[in-house]
Image (cartoon, rainbow, N blue to C red; front, side, top):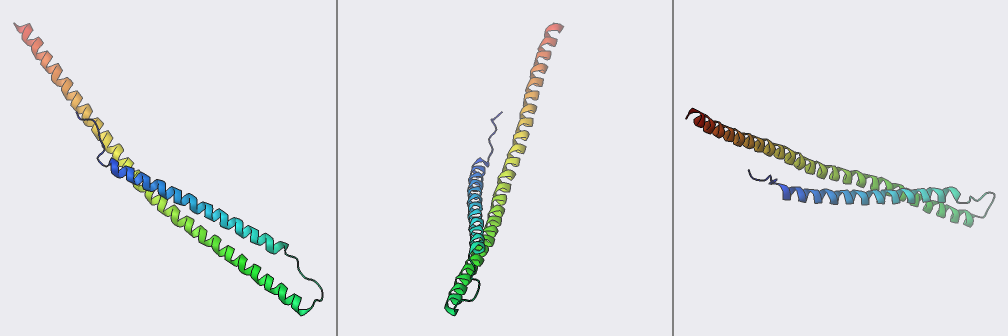
Length: 147
């Protein structure tokens, strides 16, 4: 009997490469998300540690401090938005990786099923060959005994 060969092996290899690329993209997205979380944390600490002006001061100093605070809060808001965006990108990349993984797994299951079918067929062919051999020997032995 012919040796087993999965007819979709090349497709499976391509799908495996696609899954590997999707996994790499997911890893990169997770790194971007971690960087965005770290940037947001730095912004929170910067706002929390900024000195506050207390007491009576002139209007120019208060106006300058307000401009600095507004800039800090805009930067904090931008960092928060970047983290949300990075989280959405991670979710998207995870979905792409899961889809690629499912395609590979489907081909692996098909290969396993075909391999098992081939094994069963090979076992049948071997059993048939053994049966033919035994029947031929029995026939020869029976002929020799009757002579």
